[in-house]
Image (cartoon, rainbow, N blue to C red; front, side, top):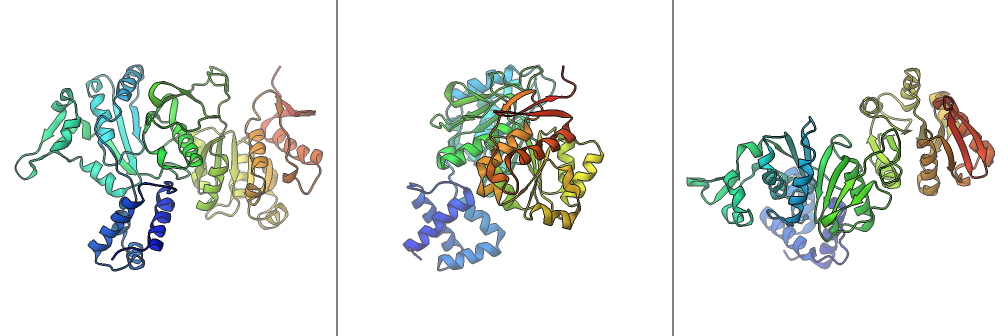
Length: 457
């Protein structure tokens, strides 16, 4: 049953594809191979091809394979300096009349999230809490939900917290769990850190833990993960990373603190600027029914914008009720209500948010198919532009999503986006659309475009 080199390389590619973790020079490769060999032996199959066919047919075995391709290093009260820091942060928030929400975004079998809850247990009478834990491994998530651990693990839990533990007796002797008051406030779910969008509301958590997992990802993936986690933090919230992790957070509204902690900067009162003087990331709603396209949009825009993704017109309507957006990118051909029908209806209801249509078809073909509703959008791009001129697309989205800022904007229009017209015609088309939709006035300057709200002095 020994696997050959080709089999091993296939396992490494599967690990990278399914979990996102980088396998270049990875010391974990031998662990992954041994885990898969054990599953093959347990299921009685003689070669890797047969095992992978079994995985396709058996959802339970698929979960066990994912578990075998995932790192499970965790412990109680790991990197202890963090817990004094988060406790002080939580104490500063107790006066707020809402539940305080804390998320362990790579919780493994639950020890980290339960450690956080134990650390804050003496504050339960002063504030209400919601503790959430997620992991890509469904087997680990179920283990976290059970909250049953071997008695030997108690050595990692300081004596002052052991009064909140329950020791097993008779048939469960040798195990312990946590008191009901802690367990009922902890919820676990499966989540992939490299997914383009995470479940739950944006800007909803007071503290997000993601410790000692970024080291397993490539730098570009690290940056996307941190950007996504930051989007789920409230302004003033805290991101906690592993002591040895130093991802690139340039361009993100984060201020570094002690021991690899970061605070999400608050907006100034009455201003779009951040407390540090940095600009807040524009919030963009991207509507596309294709998972592949949503992933491409997230990769292109995720690090520069506060990006919210949805897959239908119905979902987009719900998102608009929940949040305000600076820009919407919209697919046309979607199941249910198509994009232009939705846009026409929303404009009739008073929506003034700028819209960029992203379509497989060129504008002329789309108008023949869907009608002339394209006039309700500020610009129209074929989806191929995302790969042909990514920087030009990002700059266009920046211009359109910051259209509410009075004053001058330095912006160099990309000629690659306007193959069908010259620069002035193209700029005029964009500005006319924004003027109609947003009640702003425009003029061209040597640096780009200058605009002001019509009601500005």
